[in-house]
Length: 390
Image (cartoon, rainbow, N blue to C red; front, side):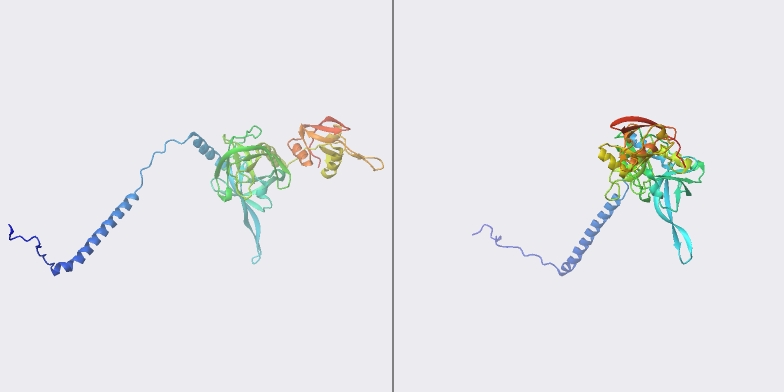
């Protein structure tokens, strides 16, 4: 007999049946909860986006580094001395029977003086029918050609601009440069005016070919980026002085590969005064004639390096200095070699280009020392250069 007769362990109380109305509202309740949850997530992302769109607090920069200040100052001091050059060629409108100017190319140039003279590369203006020069204030002027020095890839233009707008570039020197010095190039690469690139002086005494095929000697090499359009622009030292005129690059792709060349300022400062005075480079007159093909054949047979003097002009400085030319025997059967010029002012010469380059560094009135080979002996002759004969 159970002590608890009224309690059955197998007994389970019956569940209360779910009423029909609750069964109808359950899906709506779940839908409402989903909408509220989605709205909450939406508001979270909206609020989060708004927060991220607000400007961040600016971190104080502090003072510029000393070298940055120096570079900025250098650029601001010299940018107005570099100009933008557009060369022109003539186009023809056959329907209207008119001739008009068409832009042919662009380059850079340097303000040389307050008279409006502009220095650039010869190859910038080569074959151009005209040119326009744009100054730092974007005023543009027609340019006239004053003179050219193709063998040095230099040209001189002139614009009729007020002196107040002309900022001549400070002139430095290239003879005292050292590899490793900082360099700064200002120009207009690809038509983008007033561009500054920086680098170092990579090498000195390079030789490159001018458009005429003649060598340009003592050229400066820099890794400051030089691109098409930089031609004729300024290469400066850290004092903001002109040390070269950018002229060429060495690059398989045609754009900067870190090897740029500039005509040294010492050459520029020697050539430009001649272009101002006479419109061309005047080589001092010495009075000897050289023939590379024939002379080299003879000196090779003699096994003597140098330049064989073919002719000494009568009454010339060379004749007065005792220089002898090549002759033939009376019957014309044999050649009697003349003097072989081996050095000019102590610098070896092996072809006529080197001889002419050496003379072009000098001026009438200068005395040049020639080291000559004659009859298995060397001697020196001092020649006083003169103004070229017409």
